[in-house]
Image (tube, rainbow, N blue to C red; front, top):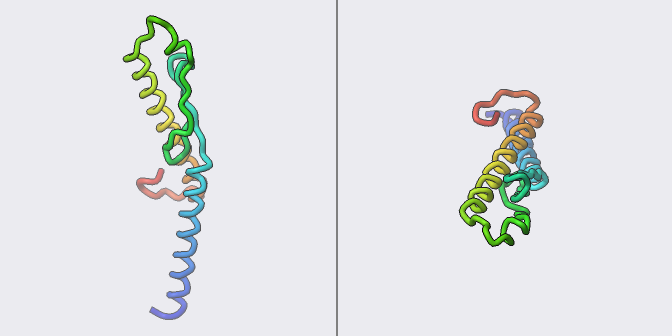
Length: 107
């Protein structure tokens, strides 16, 4: 390996690190939201799939006949949908960053 090859490799490693840092920022900056039950449960999540906010309409827990099992199902569904939306947003972001490169497993 000559000096030119080492220089190119070092440059590529720097670019890879820069892309990784960009992805980390994107994961934190990407925010998605999903609602279920006609807005009874709303989940806000970032690209790292961390729940930023879980909102439950007071009427869902305040009524005497509220169904706890239904509420649990609505929460699970909202979290799962927010996760899918986060995945979709990140796939679109990665595709944009890669400039249309077709890399298996990333798109």
